[in-house]
Image (cartoon, rainbow, N blue to C red):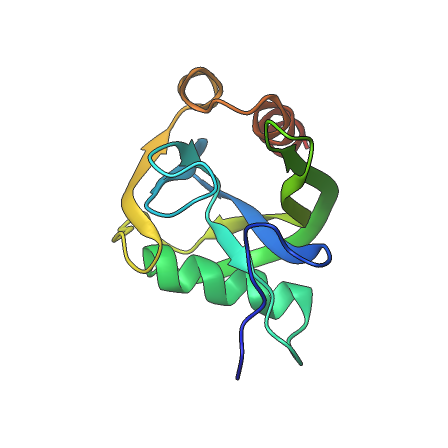
Amino acid sequence: MSEARRDYPTGPIVGVGVVVRHEGRVLLIRRSKPPRAGQWSLPGGRQHLGETVEAAARREVMEETALPLSNCRLLTTVDLIEHDADGRVAWHYTLIDFVADAEHDRAVAGDDAAEAAWFTLEEAVATVNWEETRRILRMAMAG
């Protein structure tokens, strides 16, 4: 299966993210690949052809953290569009975010995650760089 180009795409790429909760904490992963390599973020990734968005969310969390999920539900959608210095679209993702509970807290970084760790909401908000992720974290933990 040929994979769509991620940088300078010909169209938006559908991605999923998950606010994973366990005992009042949230899980973040340190991204190992662009965009935002090296930054802390929600576990998630690209939806595959023929895969529902919820199945993609569960698969990505399993691949990146080895955590099974329960109570997985749709939270919100976000656009990630970044332009280069010439004004060309360098990245364009339509991100569908979920909130779910982890069945345990033994996260193991794998796949695109260089690291996985649990944070309080306040720690997580102070750790992530993207304001949209901060907003999503607050939204998920409020409800």
